[in-house]
Length: 190
Image (cartoon, rainbow, N blue to C red; front, side):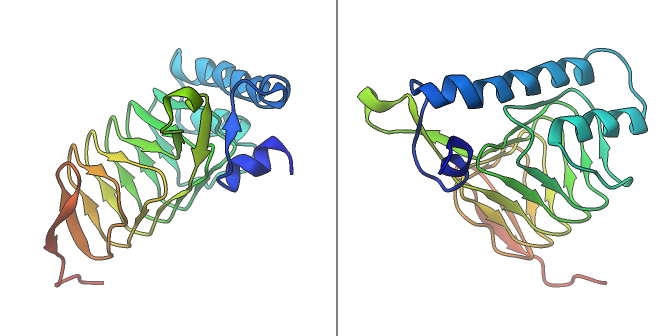
């Protein structure tokens, strides 16, 4: 199992190991170069999408709309559905995988983080990843933080500034630190 497979499997990856320096770090640096191109200067929607395709190494739907600046540590482990809007200043730490469904709206300065460090202070160079899933028709409010291993259920709303540490049920509004259910959305018209 190579370092990328271990990362996606949630197994520990140590920044001091040789494979990190020879395999992972070059890909992280490549992402930083592409992000520098994206985040400096003006690009129309098509140009922005083309730069993101270069970053993510995949074709993206023409309905995607991202307003730079946009930040990520890796880029290749982001999957985006149709009609996704990502506002300015968002950070996606995607080494564990970020999966975003259709019709998702992400406000400015949202952080989606799939990585965490070992709790032992003598092993903090070791990181562990868990994927984040954002299901269809989710709205994530300004400055929200979604942490590793979380699934946000369909139709839900994550309030501004919320810190989401656990799964969010479908059809609800969550807010606070840590986020908790504030309201259930019962009258959802299709």
